[in-house]
Length: 210
Image (cartoon, rainbow, N blue to C red; front, side, top):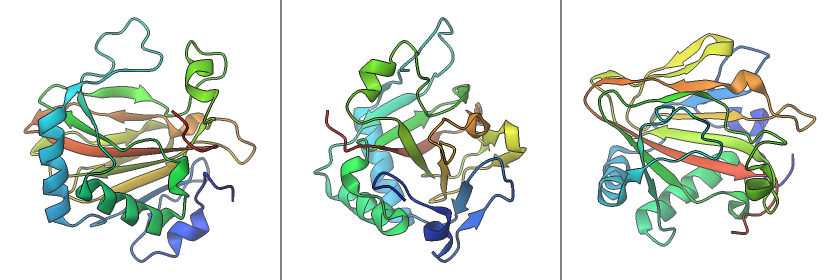
């Protein structure tokens, strides 16, 4: 296990972690990972600093990702608390993590089916991977229950996760040989009623040096 990686063994040693029974992907969930009070604090931070979400390789579809994003200040106590909980769970050296992001989805907003790893040879491969390398693991946390819609669908493995306050999803973006695993393709589906708030934390092969 490299310094920018977690492992199935590490995660499954934690109480409550469940693995999706599919050999195509290392995909896990853990309910009640974050307590409601911390979820509420993070939602407040997202509301204060949200901006339109962007994409590395945006293409021509202006509606591919329609959420809003918040880049968290690592010095904020609530963010530090979150980081400590993540490191205790996954064992990944914090130096390999990208800054924590929050996302807000209103009614009709979504993030169409995509993978989190960068495509070699893609428009922004050099820009995004030259310093810290490829993305290794994704850790995503729902901060609230959603009245309707907003599920995360992993089409290649036939699994859909409904938003629940404090529930964590995580997955290995790569195969053991380091290639991106296309079976991690996932769709943040449209919110039909209410709002959806999510935390996303990505990790890299090398220390984050931006």
